[in-house]
Image (cartoon, rainbow, N blue to C red; front, side, top):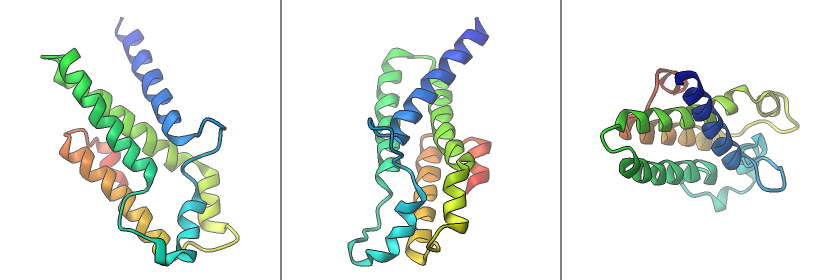
Length: 143
C-alpha cells in the first residue's frame, strides 16, 4: 500500500510539473532563451519571478488550501506533497541538459540581467518553500 501511495504521489507531482513546464502545444515554458534574451529587452524588465515560478507558487498555495481541508490532521502528508512537487520542477530544470547546454554554449552568452533573473527565480522558490515549510534538503542545496 505504501509503495502504491508513493507511486501515486510521484505521478501526481510529475503530471503537475509537466503541466507547468510545457504548454498545451508541447513547447517548454522554461527555456534558456527566456534568460538569455533578457539582456536584449532591459527596459521591459520588472523585478518579478518568471511566470512559471509564479504559477508554481499559485499552484502550491491552492494545493495547500485544498489539502488543509481534505487532509485535516494529516498536514505532514500535504507538506510532503508540496515538497515533492517543488522538487520535481527544480530537479527537472537541473537535469535538463539542453537548458544547460544553451546557457553554457549557446549562440549568445547569458548576460547579467538573465543571470539576475535566474537567481531571483531560484531564490523565490527557496523563499516560498521555506515559508511553507517544504524546503527539502535537495532544494536547500540548489540555493
